[in-house]
Length: 134
Image (cartoon, rainbow, N blue to C red; front, side, top):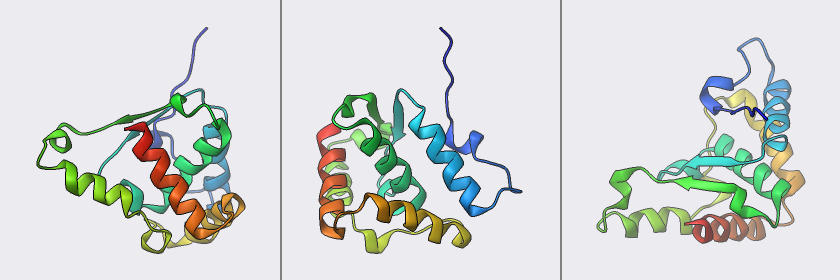
């Protein structure tokens, strides 16, 4: 059959939607997805929206993480770039997350809090999952 493709930037709910609608609309799309492709950059794990989307998808597909694929920009594949790239993943911290829209932060944190058992446990889970998928 025919499938659909969620392209985050292109499918983001319109500006008329409030934070709750944007977060829950995105979550619904992720939960309905059969696969998830991440364009992984050094800054990916610093963006609250990205971590919310990644965690939501990982949680919903556990333990079938192979439904998630990582695409790495060519420039990061150079041997000289790997140490910084891996360090950016290994040093993921909830405290360093930032959101593009301040208005979305409370709703995104509410959703992440639902997944969190502990901050350190969540951080280790994200780090290990991303590193394992490399």
